[in-house]
Structures are given as C-alpha cells and as structure tokens.
Amino acid sequence: MPNREQLMRDHRAALANCRKCPAMIGPVVSGSPVLSKILLIGQAPGDKEGGFGKPFAWTAGKTMFKWFERIGLDEENFRQRVYMAAVCRCFPGKNPKGGDRVPNSAEIEHCASWLQAEVELLKPDLILPVGKLAIGQLMPVKKLNDVIGTIHPVTFYGHYTQAIPLPHPSGASTWHRTESGLALLESALMLLQQHPAWEQVCKDI
Image 1: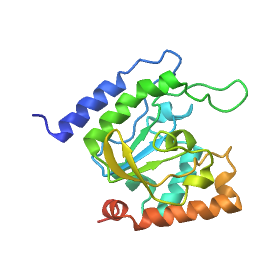
Image 2 (image 1 turned 90 degrees about the horizontal axis):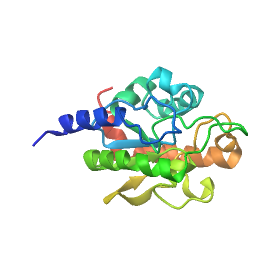
Image 3 (image 1 turned 135 degrees about the horizontal axis):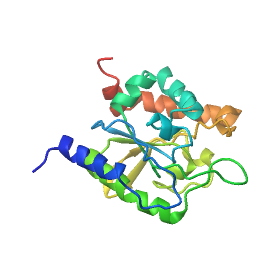
Image 4 (image 1 turned 90 degrees about the vertical axis):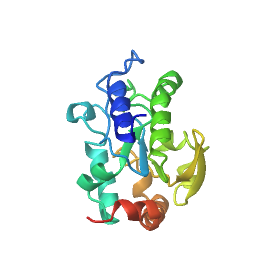
C-alpha cells in the first residue's frame, strides 16, 4: 500500500491535470504538498496567482501573511508547514461588474472532490477557512460577525475536527479593517495562536 507521501504526490499530479471546468482559467494553483495537521482553505486564486504558481501570492496574501507573522509564522514558514487548498483551484475570471467572478455551484462541486481527498489524506486537527465562500463549505454563514472570533467543531467530509474562520484579506473588503471586524479578527488570531495544532507547526523555527 502506498505511503502518505506517495498518495500526496499522486493526488497532486492528478489535480494539476484537472480540466473539469471550461470557464475556469488555468493553471491549477496549489500550495506546498506538506502533510500538515492544519488545512487552510481559500476561495479561488486571483489573476496573478497562476503566474506565481502559488496561492495568496498578491496583495491579499501580503495582508494575510502579516496576520500569521504576528502570531509566530512568517510567509515562508507558513507555506512550508500548512497545507493551502481552496474551494476552487483555478482563476474564475473577472466579473464584468468588477472584481473576480464567484465560482458557480457546478465548479465548486467539481473541485470538492479534490478537497475531500485532501481532508481524507491529511485528517487535519484544524481547518482555517478564509472568506465567506470557504467558510460556507463548513458551516452556515450569513454574516462574518456570526462566525469569526470563535472555534467551531465541524464534521467535514466525515472527519471531525475544529475550524477557526478568518475574513478574506482582500483590499476590496473593509470588514477586517473596521472596528468590530478588527476585534473579531484579533480574537480569531489569538485562538489560532493558542491552538495545539498551531503550536505544533510553529515548533523548531
């Protein structure tokens, strides 16, 4: 039976060759193939990430990695120690009304099989869903204020674990820069810093 490293390599090779969604713009964007106990789930790559070959490679990433650096992991170490996935792995294209297009339900469903395989392989002790689309895959969410700032027990693809939702660090969003959002973000980061899975990935830096 193949070991987890081989299973990860096989998974990533298949993921890189996925062409299920004709309206999505490749390439497939993935983080490092690290067998981590923390799984970060973003929404979908922007138009720059494909060129850099990694998620959160542009301005939103700069903001997000500043959050994590404050609690012990700079960008380089985070990328090496946390598995970075997304609801959709290809760029959805631009919305004619501004911003990026939100993936449709069929595209989300197509990519869900990749996320399910990663959950089954990693069996994460902690999931970090970033942004409303990602949070909504794990729990009902009408308002960010209702879910950010607390730890949530979740069962995701049959795996019981915990989730600490985070706002999307997009420059277009003001939520994480206004008073109530800032306070809830700080609470979420404090909970993350104190979580055993985070303490484990921060070891030996």
